Length: 282
Image (cartoon, rainbow, N blue to C red; front, side):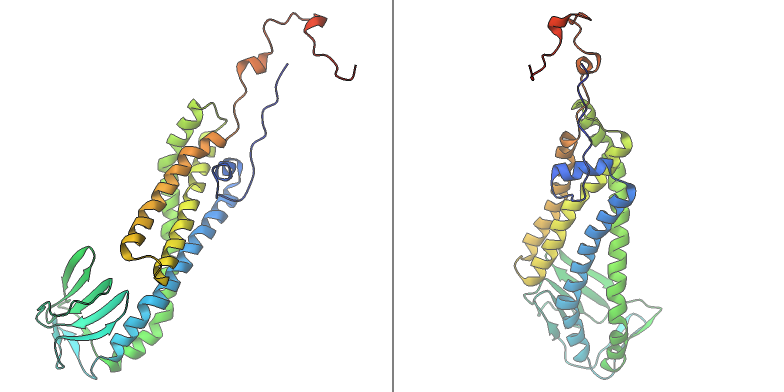
């Protein structure tokens, strides 16, 4: 007697291991649509964070700049008081300290300090310093920067969203190409019905749960529910979530039929009525 092979799973949601396994039998269009939705959530949360938590500090810093000033030949032309704070927010702050005397240390996650010859960025990871470009002349005054920022703030948000979508979609395709072979090997040794292409699609769908965790982490960080260290832990955890789904999902794929089920019982004598299954209706 031949036992039926369980039907392959079908579905849309990648929130459970069985849901991720269902994408092995889904079309490429369905997989890309779900990946696009997950990437769009991250892009939307990032745009919200920039517009709510970073850009107000930038606008406030520009508003406090003097009426005249520029960066010319690699040096900042600054005639106002130094050091001084241009803006201070919970996430981002701007200061001017011409000699980098380290007199202004603000309780913010990122502090941008403009000196006479360079700009320094202070954060949890330490200090990074970069000199001003010597071949450019850049405005550093309220009169020029306020209209410039007002015109470019919306396009910057759209560019950030588009870049996030492209990077995530391309990165997930690359990761699926790296991860599909371990997924296929896991399914092979677990006696699961998985082809190489199905393993690639399953690996691509396994990125979605971690993406949802990343989007939630950005929103919670922007609301102040997570501090910087906790947000970094969330970023690391979203990779672990993807790996966990990669490990569990192959075991949710349909099993391959055993040889005995395909060939029938070798100890059964053809035509022997004693070995025939009884009719339960009698």
